[in-house]
Image (cartoon, rainbow, N blue to C red; front, side, top):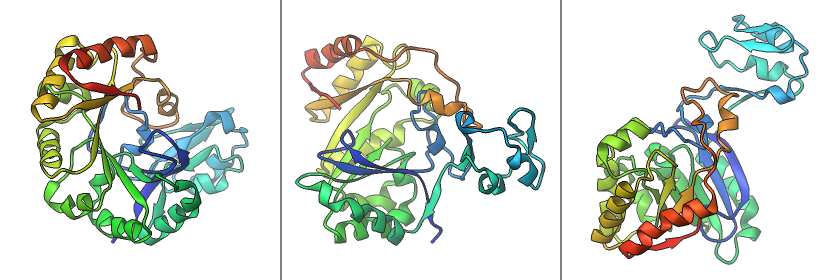
Length: 297
């Protein structure tokens, strides 16, 4: 089995499930949400990251590049169309201004990293698989998840819901908590905002609910994109019809935008401010009036 690409292993996380957690950011996602906070995790292939603030303008990267995809002129200028992600330049860079977006891990090697934090997980913490979309690699998870559970670690999985249900049933049966993100209920709006239909996503949500899999339903609230009163009311009505009683609202912030300039990304900054607590409370009222509890992340 090919190894998985992991962008980051973030320790001492407190917003990705209960307790203190270690969050694994897997690389690769079928959606292209316009507000993505982890754009380095979108592509399924590894890619180059350039952090200009670290660059010391030594020119070693340009000298090392075997295909002349980097030109040095008071700092590196990368021809992204020419770059083949061989990462020779990253080995030559003394300042770590050039780095691969991800590292390769086998299931066993990844679990070896995760158990290092075991003492911090008590009493209710554990491991959260995030991304990207962690459920996009069923073959990897079918080997990884039993290893995690063999270590008696609490396992949460963050998902956009766009995954193959049949191939992931064994994984979901062993998952202690699914953090399921809803972007929009309208299929046209969802396709406009993410590049994909939400029909598979909504069906997977129905299946998770029907199977009684523990879950937190979440919604990223993006001003001017998916937060119209009509859309929020439709989402609230949909969840209530499914028997759900609460939702977690995730306010938009701009932290992901600083990553875009480091990548050859298809995404562009939205150019809107982060959402204030007052603005989020106003959106929360729509769900509260509909009969749902609104939880903080």
